[in-house]
Length: 302
Ligand SMILES: [Zn+2]
Image 1 (cartoon, rainbow, N blue to C red):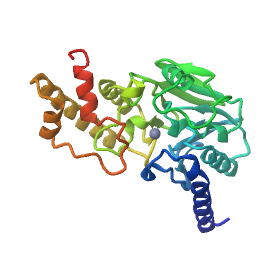
Image 2 (cartoon, helix red, strand yellow):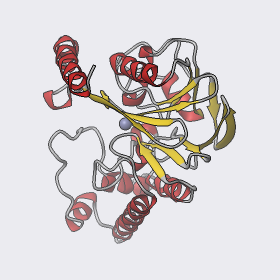
Image 3 (tube, protein in one colour):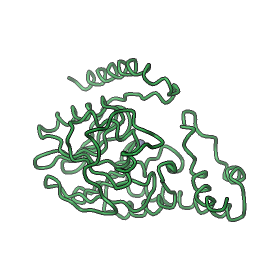
Image 4 (tube, rainbow, N blue to C red):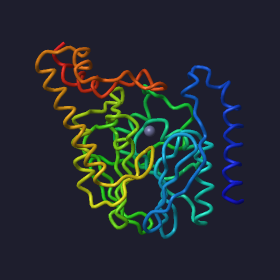
């Protein structure tokens, strides 16, 4: 299929998918209906790829000597299958491992699109969140895809001849974030810690994330010997962009801290910082960065 035909095919598939799933998701407001975006595969160094499109997160693909390691599964089984189809165009080797950057369903619910019985690697807390009811529960049955190996803070491993360093500094976007660092390729998959869709980072307090931990984690992320960072959503990033994000966010957090110390209320702080009302389509259940920092700093005082 030519590229043009492939895009048309994906658009048609997306329309069919949306038509098929609309009646199943009556509780979702129109603006949060998942959109199946065209699948696009991008090559990085030494057998490493990232795949955007489908529904939900980016996925990573690492081709080893005998098998393929996937990072994040996207949000729907159809999207997971689309990743499998892209891998089949790159190599006949089987997928053997999936590493998840965290437990949010836009990264995990594509798992049923992959074969069962793979080695599934997560951070310790991510496994706990996947095994127990959480605030953003899965919409699919993940039996057969639960983590089979977990990492606490740091673990170096060679999978299929490829060196991996899996890193967790502190709770950040969630309490179970895991960074996948490939030192030989100078690539890191950073999950949603480095996502730039909002002016400041999205921290899930309901999944025990932390703004202080976000700053600590970002310091670790920018210190890695990496040329290309692949976030959970959006295009690849360079180190200077992430350094700037870290600086801006740390300064904002410091400012909020000062205002809290002056005894200001949350509303007063938001007003003083000129915090815009959330953009249309923003999930009303997610706290803004200001709200997150305020709640963290005042939780033991009320
Ligand atoms: Zn995400």
